[in-house]
Image (cartoon, rainbow, N blue to C red; front, side, top):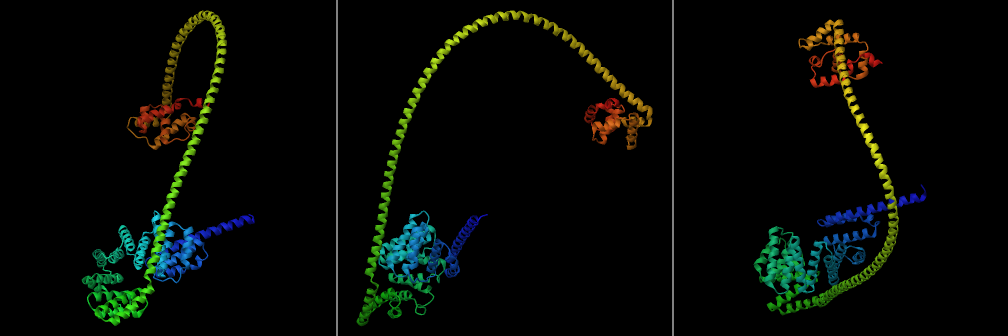
Length: 587
């Protein structure tokens, strides 16, 4: 084996190992992904343990690893610090990924920008994720539902309530199709109706969300939803329902601070007229100073509260804070950017649809051209075939004319030959008539010979019958001779045979032995002949042969051996040579 062969084998083994390693890594990441659906922190730890192996793998495996890490951190509510990684992943999977991978990478790009407070970009990537999900036959339905949910949240933030309602509707329809928990979609539908001023519909959806929580008895797990319901019922003025939600909330947001929970409690206390409690919760939000959106709503509520109570000084103070926060949040700019994203995305969809129609039109035009070309080619082929068939037909006509001429010449020659043959036939007939006379004479002679042969045949049959009678007489004579010889030399044996054949006595072993000895003494060559003719035989066959040699009849042999009549007759016929003289077999 030369060096090149060894090198090829090593390279092949390396490629096989790399392929196995790639599949093992992807399978392990799929397993970690499943674990991450329930326990993201554990899944992150497991994923970190693979980092050293992953960094030595292919670019695809590394991209899948980074995307899975973003997914797990999103589920664990770990906020991203930058968009560098996700931008690289979007560029890679847009070029190399499948539709499902494009859906996933755009969804998590939207999640990253949502957490980075970049609402327009977040909406852009969530919309792209929707596009890829709806483009393919198969998609991640849960991810599609979450994309609708995130878009509802983002559109709500930029006060585009009509679009927010549309996204919530898609989210709820998808949950109903998958028969999943509908608490969040019901809340989104209720909030959208509330923002659009449709209080009755909003209350109906909030009731549906609360019923599901009540049926599941999972109050602690749905604490955030109960706080939202408390806020929304309070805003609707349905204090009785709000009080029920409040009773299900186990902790006080002042003790375990949560800005939105404080705002919800403030909203509830405002609806029942407890102004002091409203002020406490709203001021706690402003003192924290971390959540601009809730600070904005708290300042607005305090301004409204003090203005209603006639406290102009505090009302002016909180109105100033309210205006500062309004400038900081810049809702107008957000709405403008979100509108730009929607318009750009709609333009992108229109362009895509227009390109699709153009491609379809080009496809039909190209198909028509191909059909016309095919028709022209078929017409040309048809004309060529027609010309070839016509020429072939002409050649066949010429060939037939030549053949007819040959047939005509052959016909003349044939007629001449027929006349010659007729003359020869006349001569043959004359010869035949002469031969017929000779044949008649031969037939007469043959009939005479047949008569003589018939006479000879009758004489021959008569002679054969006489010969057969003589042979039977000889066999009978031999049997009697054998019997008389045996009676003369072995009277005891003969007495035992007679008694056995008449049923008076059964032959014993000693009697059989005496019979064998008597026959062997009388016919010394018989045993050797028996061994030669039979080769291998059993005791019963030997007894039958010796009894035949002793001259017994078939009936007597049957009585002595107790064998069946058919067997005795078959063996007597088979061993007919026993009755012939021993000297004949030797000679």
